[in-house]
Amino acid sequence: MTTTTTTAKDVKKHSRVYFTVFGVLALLTVLTVAVASLELAVGIGIGVALTIAVLKVSLVASFFMHLISEKKLIFIILIFAVLFIMALIFLPLSDALTNVGTKNVP
Amino acid sequence: MEIPFTVEARPDTGLENPKLGMWLFLASEVMLFGALFSSYILLRTGASSWPIQSQEVNVVVGTVNTMILITSSVTMVMAWASLKMDNFKNFRIYLMSTIFLALVFLIVKIFWEYIPKFHHGHYPSTNTFYALYYTMTGLHGLHILGGILINAYFLIPGSKMWKKDRKRFTNRIELAGLYWHFVDLVWIFLFPTLYLL
Image 1 (cartoon, rainbow over the protein chains, first blue to last red):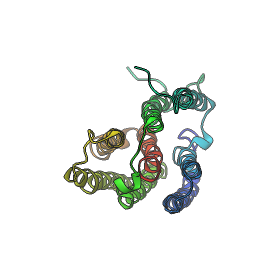
Image 2 (cartoon, rainbow over the protein chains, first blue to last red):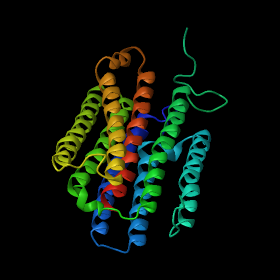
Image 3 (cartoon, each protein chain N blue to C red):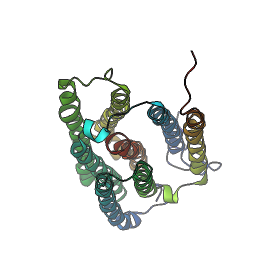
Image 4 (cartoon, rainbow over the protein chains, first blue to last red):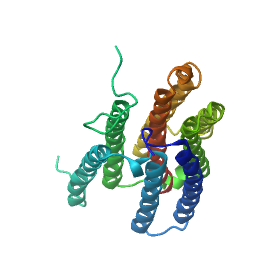
C-alpha cells in the first residue's frame, strides 16, 4: 500500500477496507466505555481497557498508516521506540512497586 | 539543486527519504508521550489517594471527541486515496473534512471541558491528576493544532504542487496523514487512561 507500489485500482479496493476499519474502531470505542461502566476489579478493568486500546492502535497503524505493507527498516525503528518505552515505564515502576508500603526516611 | 529520493525509494533503505524521516520523527514523538504516560503511572502508583477519574472528567464528551478523531483519520486516509485515484476534487473535500473535524475536536475540548473545569476551580495546580490531565491533553491539543496548520497548508498554498508534480504531492499528503494518524493513536491511549480508569 506504499506510494511507490500502489496502483489506483488497489487504492479503490482499499477504500472499502478503510471504512470497515472505521466501523470496527467505533464499535471498540463504545465497548471500552461500556466495559468501564461495569465497575470491574481495578486490575481487570485496566487489562481490558488497555487490550482494547492496543487493538485499536494496531488497526490504525496497520491500515491507515499502511504499516501492514511497510519496509523492514520502519519496523526496526519502531521496535527500538517500543523497547525504550517499555524501559521508561517498567524500570521506574518496578522500583516504585518495591517501595510500596515503606515510609520515606527524611 | 534537486533533492534526491523524494518520490523514488533509496536502494539501500528501500524507502523514500521523507517517509524515513517522518517515521524517525514519529519514533521521537512516541518517546515524548511515552515519558508522560510513564510519569502518569509512577505518580498514580505512588499516590496515597487518587480521584475517581470518571467523576472528574466528562466521559460523554471524551467519547464524542474519540469518535471525531477516528472519523478524521478516515477522512485523512481517503484524502490520500483520492489523490492516488487522480481525484483532486474529492481530495479537497476529504482534507477539508479532516480540518473541520480537528477544529470541532479543539472547540469541544476547550468549551465543553477546559472552561467548565476552570469555572469549577479545577486548575493544573489543584492536584496531581489535574496537573497530568492538563499537561497530557494540552500537549495533544497542540499536536492537533499543528495538524490543522499542516493540512491547511496542503489544502491551499501547498496544493499548487499537484499541477507540477503529482507523485511528490501525493507523497506529502501520505506523510501528513502519518502524522495525523499518530495524533489519533495518542488519543486512543489518552482516552481510557484519563477518562475511564
